Length: 409
Image 1 (tube, helix red, strand yellow):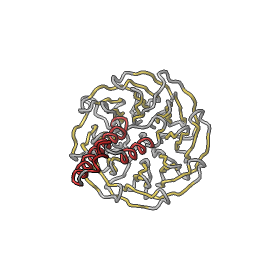
Image 2 (cartoon, rainbow, N blue to C red; image 1 turned 120 degrees about the horizontal axis):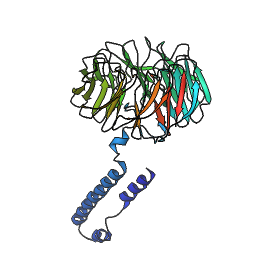
Image 3 (cartoon, rainbow, N blue to C red; image 1 turned 135 degrees about the vertical axis):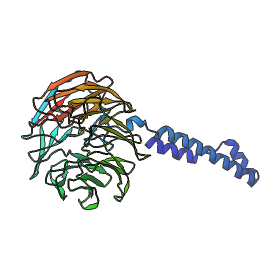
Image 4 (cartoon, rainbow, N blue to C red; image 1 turned 180 degrees about the horizontal axis):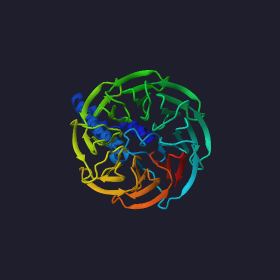
C-alpha cells in the first residue's frame, strides 16, 4: 500500500509531456484542451494502477489466511477453508487435558490456541507445545460456542446465556453480556460489533467496546446458527425453518427464504450463494441475489439429517451427515462422492491443501482427498469428535468429548 500511495502522488504531479509545456505560449483554448486530454490520460493510468494493485483473487479472498483461524469456520463467511499448507505425513504433536468434554471448536491466532470446554473454562495455549498461558473460569459450561478473536479480545458464549469478552493476553474479563437463554451459536466480530445467537430466539448485536446492546432481532425459534457475514449483512439459518439476511448496521431484515425444515447448521457463504444442511435430510444452496433456493441435494438412499456445517471451495461443498457419512457435493448440487464412517458426523469439516479434515462420533479423525473422498489418513482418538477442526500454520487442532485437545502437524 505504501508503494501504491507513492505512485498515486507521482501520477497526480506528473506533467503531460515536454510538448504540453510548450503549449503554454499558445491560446487559452488550446491549453485547456491539452489539459483535458492530460487529465483523461492520468485517469486511465490511475485506473489501471488501481486495478493491478487492488483486484483480489476472489477464490482465496473468501478463505482463511494461513496463519490464523480466528473464529468458528475460520472466517466471517464461514467457508471452513484455510490457505495453510499442511504436512503430507501428519503426526500427533501434543495433547491437552481439559477435564471435561470439548464440543467447542478452537481458534488459532499466531502461535496461540483458544478453546472452551464443558468444565466452564476458556483456555489459552501455546500452539507449538500445548503449554497453558491462562485459563478464564466461567460459572457454567461452554457447549458448542466457539471462541472468536479480534483486536486483542476473545469472545465466547456459555450455556447460561452469557457472551464473554476476555483479554487475549491476560485472560482477564473485560465484560459479559446476558441473553435470555443458553448460547450454542459462536460469536462473529464485524468492526466494533459482535454478533451471536441465543436460544431465547434472538440474534444479538453487541458493542465490542463495552458489551452494550446495539440491537437484537427476534426470530421464531432458537438461534443455534452462527451468523455468516457478507457485504454488511448477517445470514442465519434458523430453527424456525427460515433463512434470513439481517443488516448489521441496524438489525433490519433484508429478506427471508423458507428452508422448509428445522436447521441446526450455519451457512457457508461463497460468491453470491449460501450452503447449509437441514433436518429434512437435505443440503440447500440459496442464491443471495435472487433470494431463492437454487438447488437441494439429498442422498438417494440414506435419509438422515445434516447437523454439520459445510466447508465450501470453488468446486466442492463438503459436510457430515447423521447417516455416518461425509458428503462431497458438486457446485451444481449433484453428489460427487461419499465417505462412510462408523457413527454420525456432526463435526464440521475443514479444508486445506487439497484435503478434507473432519472428526466423527466413531472416535476417529479422518483426512480425505478433496477431489475423490478417498481416505488419506486417520487417527483413533477413542472418544467422539463432534467439535470441528481449526487449521493454521500447518497445524490442525480438534477437541474430543473425553476432554482431550489434539494438535496434529
